[in-house]
Amino acid sequence: MPVPTPETQGFWDGTNAGELRLQRCDACGKNYFPPRPFCPACASRKVSWFKASGRAVLWSYVIHHRPVPGFKPPYAIAVVQLAEGPRMMSNIVECEQTPEALVLDMELEVVFERQNDTITLPLFRPAASAKG
Amino acid sequence: MRRNAVTVVGAAETTNLGVIPDLSQIGLHADAALNAMADCGLRPKDIDGIACAATETPVMLAHYLGITPTWIDGTAVGGCSFMIHVRHAAAAIEAGLAKTILITHGESGRSRIGNPARPVPPQSLNGQFEQPYGPMGPPSMFTIPVLRYMKTYGVTEEQIAQVCVVQREWAAKNPRATFKTPISTEDVLNSRMIAWPFRLLMCCLVTDGGGALILTSAERAQDFKTKPVYILGTGESAETPMVSQMEDFTSSRAFRVAGPTAFQQAGINVRDVDHLMIYDAFAHLPIYGLEDLGFLPRGEAAAFIAERNTAPGGSLPLNTNGGGLSYMHSGMYGMYALQESVRQMRGIAPAQVPDAKISVCHGVGGMFAASGTIIFSNQDP
Image 1 (cartoon, helix red, strand yellow):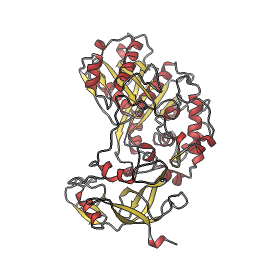
Image 2 (cartoon, each protein chain N blue to C red):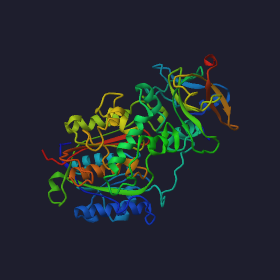
Image 3 (tube, rainbow over the protein chains, first blue to last red):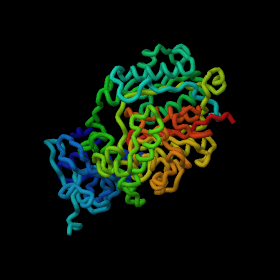
Image 4 (cartoon, one colour):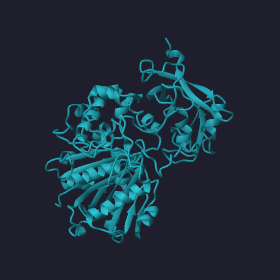
């Protein structure tokens, strides 16, 4: 389970509040992830948290077939491309874990899954607008 | 660095490869180091520089082997650490920081004697932003970018499986290869599913072993009985410790920096290359490597391999020991790729490429995290 640090606490505060929070550079406008208190593009320390839309597309993934505590194989380990630009690793839920159901570039939306008192994970499901 | 200023004069693997239950990890380092010293007739007192990668440190190895170094390097960036050690050692010899440098590797990858598991720290960025989603090491992480590559270029699972088939053909020519029995595309695709689209035979072996190299100036190389192998060019780079944060899922930025840096220093282009090693922890790596090093245009490497251009008898002999997929892979494979390049340049490889004069050895560290490239030659132009 993740253990937040001072630099990442804002992200985990966001997921606990039901928000996917990213950072934006006040100097150059770059949206970035994972969290850090400066801009990886221009090194400015003037950066701000903002609430992302939660919209994403499925960028790439594998379907894991081996046992891992807390997971029921087969399950997809995915990277999603957020609408705001950054990519992040996640799981795809409310969707069959098959190559047929998991189509690259399918539209996704964030959902939040509480793990314990301090950690809520951002997961992604097929977007309501994309469901048939 | 002046061209051809530094040479490899000593090179050896551990006495055994595969399952080695009677040596701990530091013992594997020592076995390889003693073999490399015997290869070129040196003793520990003749060595004044030492490099190795984690878990062991150069301090541990200097003490264990009885070496008093004037230069040490503990660069540990995964499986290409040894390419980077070669690069740093060549620069150090050029700069006069040391005269005779030993690079060692030992890894009890299978028996895990003196090689404890290293969990991902939960406060690291990997621990916070990748580990929660259920990966279990490289087979479920290093493979994640590949579907994007396949969609971008229309590459098939069958083509990726061909990488494994061709490398097994090379392994069959190597008595020390772990797997020598020929396999078909169907064998690969029907092997146990690990992390779709990756099957067991698309993933590297997990074995025990080690290797060591000894470098000195070209000027001194004539004092040794071994055929000198010249270092023409070197490169290194890093991108990200998190595979999810690669800039481009169809290409490695670290490869695109390390490879061309080495080619530029060597003053050669890809058409000059007679023999090629591309670190193959998984079947997609030779595909990415061939394109990122400039051997092929984007999207063409899988078909190039499937059409047998890198197979025995093909125009570009690649991973001629059988690679991490079939020869051996203890966890950090780069040392074994370097050993095969040196054997090819000495003309003593079991699957020797006739008249090979230039060998390129390209490594990856972590999961597209880092990279190192070394260009060798047996010619002193």
